[in-house]
Image (cartoon, rainbow, N blue to C red; front, side, top):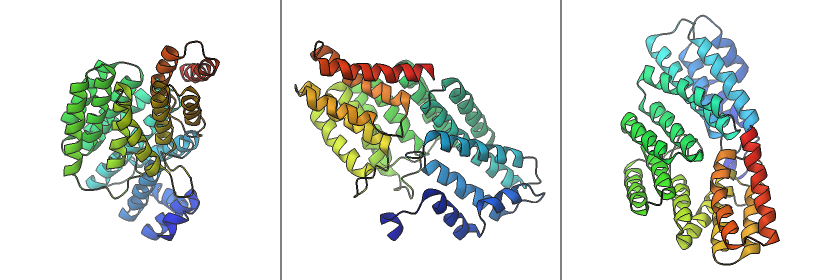
Length: 341
């Protein structure tokens, strides 16, 4: 409970967790990975490290996290040259698959779609090699996400269908359904959107509550509500969207105001901005919109996608207002930065 209220510095926390679970720090784990005989305790240390990296996705600066992810991915790939049992070899390939998914997400966040797609395909192959439904499902979910931010909504539907077939009983199917719903919303198909959301909600309720809701490749009720918020905002159900935005803000922010999930917070502010703009509150809408742009941790393609909802309302309802034009210029600057990256 103390750690939850007063969390230690993240790198120190990781070292402490690895030490308490395995008796080894990072330096010793790396040293043992280079030895000719890798023990199960060494792999336990690697597994804990991979989980920690995936759990730092919501808030860690992407350049820092992507460097760590690539470094550990190289180490695990090199580990395949060591003397491993069949079980250990399979486990290291699974760990490499999860890291490849993480690195691919970060590459997409930072505006490098070619690298992101190449890394996603690497994860897909690793998932195929070990027949891991979760890795396969998330690789398809990434394809759906890439397509969504590119405006290829039919591509989203194709990716989510393939992902659900590959995922089996893994919880990634819930997020695949959420991505499907977001595509239907942008295609103006409210009935299909609601059907996908209901199917996802029913599946989510049938699954056990996850132990680590910070892990990027875990779906929990709060994360699902975040996706539902996007759908309702886009189709104009403002009351429901704002209610969900308030929930996203509460579940993504600590009692002291620290944003644990700043990317979700940004999209919640955009949602409030869209609703305010539709209600005729221009200054309030722009204020919310600017709050969404202030966070240090951003996914540029995702931010550009959701900010387009606010841009459309401002451009339609306030075409000559200086405040609206100024904010639209800020959004265009983000779009240009994303395109250049």
